[in-house]
Length: 421
Image 1 (cartoon, rainbow, N blue to C red):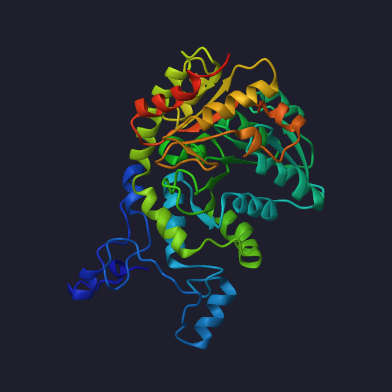
Image 2: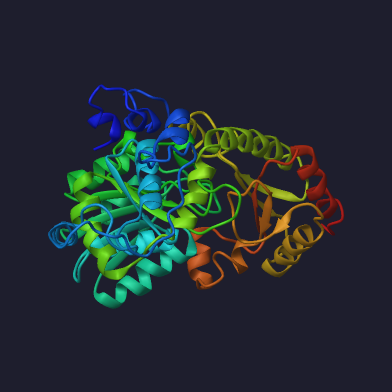
């Protein structure tokens, strides 16, 4: 309950001081990204407050007992925090979900997903094109506890259907994928999952709710690595799950309280600030990425460009329907090479020739980042797993930021123009 709810109409200074509480219905995503949060404290701060406290004082023993028993309000930093709660409310609002739960990293969000939903003997169907650590988490770590995972084509619906078993409890997809930008049909996967009595979880890290809301296409759970575009400036680690109130409170909440994949309040506050510019950034970075991708398609040394905003992309029409008509900010391209060794050498040459781009493994930053997926994000996979996922040694991934796109083009040209092809 907020101060606005309890205002007795006397126009007291306190009721006027707390100026923001319940938002009207029907606000658009850009407004929700700026305004969704808990009500301010009695001080009336306009920027969400950062609460750095591991514990919260209770008014009396009976209240403390009730709150601990029912996980109400704020008791201990591992289970709840006002700053983290504001972030959870904002993520849920932007995704069009009832509730969200924030975690320390994107991978811990997937760990929470599995620990909350799965048990020994259960079966998962997952796209083989997802992030390398996600593949390892499902195949190796969950596999230790008797959870089986079948990896299928991102885009072949027949493979998803064929992989169904009576024990299938979860379908998991990332769209677009990292780094090949394959786009799955969320609505079709949701129908397949629901017909089988399973849930569909979608990793929306690379589009963000600024471009894509998986729930609108039938997804039951939306996962984020908040480290990426939600933060948007490469500062902190974070993750989240969003879905129904029942899932967040009754299924994932108890696991979070016990296992403690907790998001730090400072990190939550940074991402709250990042999300205020999410829509502006995503539109600008998508426009920059499209210009760079169009240029890359014209380069003789480039065998193929992977970018959903290009008409040449196999799922271009689907991407435009699901992603608000924009391709996102992630571009990958395959360099020509007579062998995998030559292709890798060419990729290293192009990457090492840059003077503006950052050579790093993150993405979603305002600074453009270039990397070699086969030796970084997918470096811990076997060669067979990389081959199945389409990750070759000549593949270069570019996460386009907010620099002028022609400066990004000029930086790539340094290496591309000096390749021995």
